[in-house]
Structures are given as C-alpha cells and as structure tokens.
Image (cartoon, rainbow, N blue to C red; front, side, top):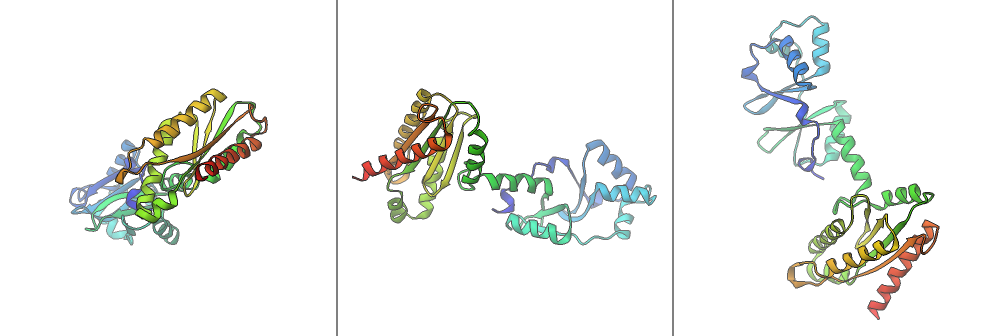
Length: 281
C-alpha cells in the first residue's frame, strides 16, 4: 500500500509554520505553542517545502540547555538536522524502513513537488500494521488469521452462533474472460454486499480467492434469513457487462447442528461444497 493511502490519525497534533513567520520566535514561544495545542511536532516549511522539524523532545532538550530566549532561527543554525523525507507514492514498508534505519519517530511525507503533505509516526504504523494483520487489503473484510482467533475466542462460549460459507460460482471463467482487475472488482462488490447484509456485531471474512465466511450471533431462523438475503443481493448485484453473479452457500448453527463450534464449521463448509456440486451437475 502507498503512503498516500494511509490515514494519519495524529496529524491533528502537528503544527506547521513558514520559516518567515518564525524569525522573531524564540524556543520559549515554541514551547508555549506545544503546550497550548498539546502538540508533539512542529514542521517548519519554506514556501510549503519541509525545512526543519522540531519535536517535543527537542524543546525539552533546548529548555534544559537554557536556550529559552534564543531566536528559533539561531537554534536551527546551532542544531542542524538532516531532514528525512519520503514520497507519498512510496510504500508503507519503505517508510517503515527509513524510520528504523534513521531511528526517527516522525517521518515527513512530501508530494511530487516536494511540498509537505503530512507526518507519519509510529502510532500510525501501529494502527495500520495491526489492521493489515487482521484484514484483507482488497475488501476490508477480516482475514483467515483473524477468523481463527475469533473461533478460538468463541468456541467455549455458551451462545448461539451461525456460520455461513460462501463461494462464487464460475468465478474463474469471469477472470479468464474479463481479466483479473475486473475479477477484483467483482470480489469487492460481493464483499460490500456481505457487509451491508450483516450487523455490526457480526463478522465477515475473506479466506482468499472467491471464498467468504460469515459469523452471525443469532438463532437459526435469523441465520437462514441472513443467508437468503446475501444470496438474493449477490444474484441481483449490478455488475458491468450485464454479468449475473451466482454463488454456492452453506450454513450451520450452534447448537442446532452441533454444540461443538468446530463441527459447525465443518458442517457449513460441507453443505457449501454439496451445493456447489449440485450447481455444476
């Protein structure tokens, strides 16, 4: 994923000032800005291009060194920095590599004209990497790794749980006929249908390819209704080239089909493949 696609949650904690506006400012003035705005970074720009970066740690060090009343421009001359920047077109892994290599907590992101765009910090990376570890990048659904965690979490809980296994029919033919980019759009469409068909308390997962799993916290009647709703929405989905999507689906319920959640998974999976065989025959 490119850096420009990452939402930086902490950019509201950043001050940006033009160099011409800080010539008469002192370290003490900047300290007051940090305190007032509860910020931890000040980016100084020259004609919108990054020129210098001050962090809360820099301010503390400057105050300890009794630089309180020296002009900020003098401080910058006394304490030069190699400004590390990264293009917003680079990948998040390149940004992470730079931060690790230079041991910095804040990385300036620039556009193609070298104008300042935003700051990436480790908070943003922690949020992004956590989400990336749990979610399928293409669809935004949870991935198989998180599915296994959730199953382990709920298998000993005494509550009703429904499992739906869903697989698109003839998806390979769609890929072969219209290309993989078109196939990706189909997968995204199906993922959106699933998201719109379940509640916030339920879970939807993409196992890879055209295989999806849905976990519903409800009784067997609700499970059946949700399954039918998803099938109908997929069949009626608006797809380019007037393609009609078909899917095979199997579902099972705890405790209706089994008290053992692992067995419920196997039953749902088996029913889905039985339905898929029936479609092919």
